[in-house]
Amino acid sequence: MPTTKLRVALFTLPIALGSIVLVIGSVVPAAPAAPQYLANDGHVHLTNYVQQGPDIHDFLRVMGDKVGRATLFGIPLQQTWSYRLDGQNAPTYYLDTDAPLYYYSFTDAAIAMAYRSLTPPEQARFDPMITGFNPADMYAADHVRRVLETFPGVFEGIGEFSIKKEFVTSKIAGEPPALDDPALDRLFSLAEEAGLVVLVHCDADVPFPKPGVEPAYMRAIGALFKRHPKATIIWAHLGVGRIIRPVKDHMKLLERALDNPQLSNVYFDLSWSEAAKYVVATPETTKIVADVISRHPDRFLFGSDEVGPKNQHDYLRTYETYRPLWKLLKPADAELVLKGNYERIFDEARRKVRAWESTEKAKRAPSAQLP
Ligand SMILES: [Zn+2]
Image 1 (cartoon, protein in one colour):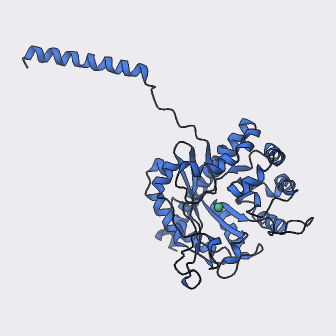
Image 2 (cartoon, protein in one colour):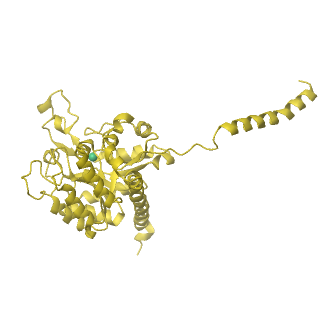
Image 3 (cartoon, helix red, strand yellow):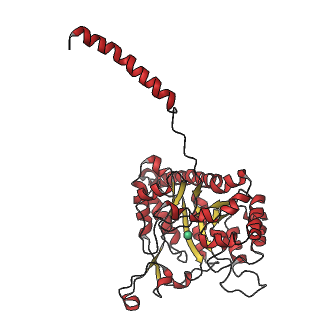
């Protein structure tokens, strides 16, 4: 190319580029809008009862632009595959077999490694929890401490762990936990000290209660929670289960707990499709629950309780089942239940646990050991 032509070309290029930018600038928004998430998920299991589930990067894609943040844990109970009982029929769910469940502590390492495989912005969307301990073991709190020490900067809570759960706790190899077990108190005390969120499953009642009798575990659960006023406790799926039906007065009992200043540290998750079906059973049941939430909108949070969700449709089914309830709530209350309460609770846990970890690290530093 002759020099003059080259000069002209070089001179006109920026003008041409400038006009492209101008043209593009006039049609493309300056920055992509932040996704308007439907919810944060306070209760989801990355793996099932045989420790299988999607890769965390795939789960992030399942969350997509619908779920902003999610708790991150597996399931601490591993279903035994007993050849003697089941031959080649490998069970994947606790109802598939009579073989026992046992505590599988490796789940915590697997969760920590999955979390660490993410980029920092991806990590910010997860709130990892420690679950791989036997809550009936006095050493359970020591396990939690060890996991925090081994994987600093990762975990923010403990759970979901089960104290009373229909069909499950009776299948655990060894002793099921009791509500007045000092091993539980050691766990809850550590949660208070370190700022860990406690996500606990405890049925409020036995599966087939006598009518008119107070739910079997209600009083003992309340006593346990009251012994640990500084712990931030989330009571999973309102204390109901697959067949632990909310008795007629269930919401009245929950509201009594919500009104009790000694239990102001207790939150309730609206999770699990099995529990959702009781809430939205009729327009009346939905309204009863909506009215209680409206009086205490900062005490409830959504959770899917899905297990290893592989696609967004399945993942959002609990959210969809609860939709009649969301519709009954004032927009500001729905916003709290679906997103705001989660953010407040887990942001605080993040801050507190990280601060506790650095204090503990300083205590373990060699100079701290010197006389
Ligand atoms: Zn669960």
